[in-house]
Length: 367
Image (cartoon, rainbow, N blue to C red):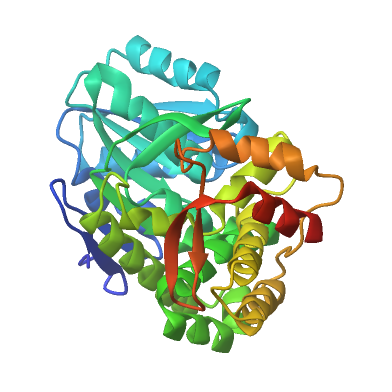
């Protein structure tokens, strides 16, 4: 909690490289908070064409006010998942080289999940690793991609196939930034919030049901509570399994289906949160087909996602065989076969290996 923002909330992420997630309004103007993780005398803000005009100058001014003499550079990328490529990764690395940033520099990832993943990967690689501070501006990034240190870019063959684990020095989530978020992006973030209840906290899912209207109306207290509880869930799992050798895979509930949808649509159809919403419904149906869960639990999940305005059915025209082919290349697949996060009902998710492709295709055909 910061003195300048007594309403801010803090979630600690432990492990070998501990850091804090600070959540609250007005944090992008808090120079002392922003500058606290900076060890050297240079920083670079990486953002995109949607976010940079809104916040990049404010962040740069706040940093310079708190640390006179700090050299702050800014690099702006195109917006959208289609920009999360090796070519744009190279562009950021070249910008770091042109700015002559050394190993004690700090990279600020200002934007949604695409910027967080891409800029975080650049920070992981530049000089074999420089500090990265995540400044998520979307709900999706605040509750998921900015926390835990997974960074990556996409290939045409699949999502997030080239990357590294690189925990941030800090995560600073300014809830005021959500005011400029398109309604579709807010809903996409709510899909990942629902995921935390679905995979391990039935009481949180109840809370989301009770507070759905407040969240959709962007009530500050409701949003802060949802973000803090989601981050606490992820932080606890990441602390126990930082490199996804076991329990952390639970965070991929809905993602095996979702990533396949995104890849097949060329990252130009459903956005990530929407694809995960569909993926969670399909994962619930797969769990039912395999005899693990009751239909009523899947129906309840589907109804809550629909209440948040999210899609819950496979988009028309997608071929189940092609989707399964993408799943075989997914990072969560193993040599023995497909691996999915399934559940035994709400709040009781687990990882299941060697799932028969025939069962997956049957669920996909049912949509």
